[in-house]
Image (cartoon, rainbow, N blue to C red; front, side, top):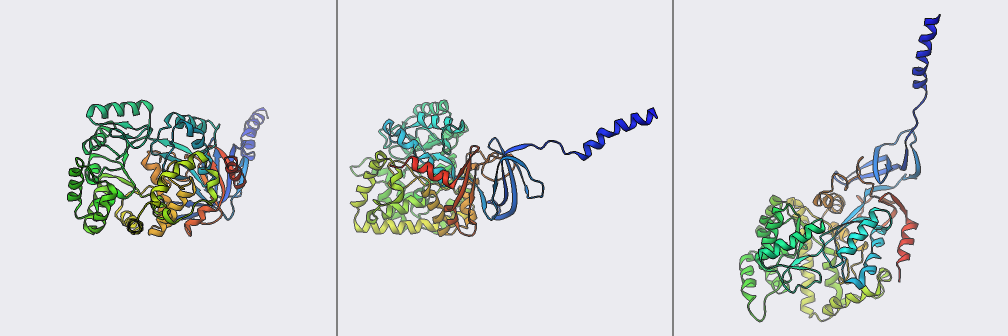
Length: 476
């Protein structure tokens, strides 16, 4: 009997363990019954449950009868969940007097589902780093910020805060300072930089393992820059030049004009490039870009907006009220220039925009990596943070991309470019819970991105009402 008692006593804990469930983990947030948009495959994974803690997705699974314990639960039945959007070309700039005005743009990104932005160079680097610190700490509502810090350019550059380079010593000093700042990549600009300095900066950055993007001076070719290691070309002007059958002679003409009273610039050369567009040259440059893994940021939206600026009245734009008057005053330069354009220039700009639209599906088909960027920021008239990226994605689809391809350009492609795809860019366990819940399916209609139900970023949940309140807080 004593032996039997001892055996039964030892068995009871085991039996009890089988009958009683262990304490369940309490997650910060659980989202149930979501239609998860797999942006890589272009398919919907229906009725998914996500468990999130500390801003990280801990679990993604098909909904089951077992309810997960959470501090907060969102029933996403009938709604669509996408990764947070990435705007891969924005600017924070304008000098110390515009620090607050720039900071107040941050909620506009979140309110439009943008949880990450890439600052493409400006003169507010210390402030940008401080905002990033506060955002990470949960003290400031805004997107994750990647930044190039100051741009690299030539002597007496167009944009304030740029680092001027001429010699190799200048280049090394500039890269030293950027590495000391711990910037995320290097942005090279075209305003006064020489061909040699531009290409040598790419080579020097490549040796240091730094990512580079740039505006191409027309004294160099995109093929040369890509072969040197340029990681991305901003805008389509430089790709377009490479599509000309006369690219070499146009480049030589620009180089020879530098010592004359009237040097040829980008816009002076565009009509000749347009007339000599060659599909064979186009195919060759795309092959080069694919081989060298050089991405392209099309920025169709700002090109279209600026082409229409001479005939469009933006004074009653709904979003203008959310832009600080100090930033609004920076719009005058482009606006005055647009109003001085001749009828012929206006007509050509529209033709150019239409031609640019044809480049996008051709690059996509060739395998060129596309990154979605708005170019929003001070001095870029009426390119409002947030909505301009949504406009960019709509134009990418209008140009010929599928909604899934457009979403890739604004999510996983950006994450891969900035080497963050192991932690962001798709909806998977182990990745950051930067998410956007939509009322409609964006794979059916890209305009569904404008019907936001909830945004989740940095562990914070923002309902549509919360987002409206955030915007009202910065309204003027």
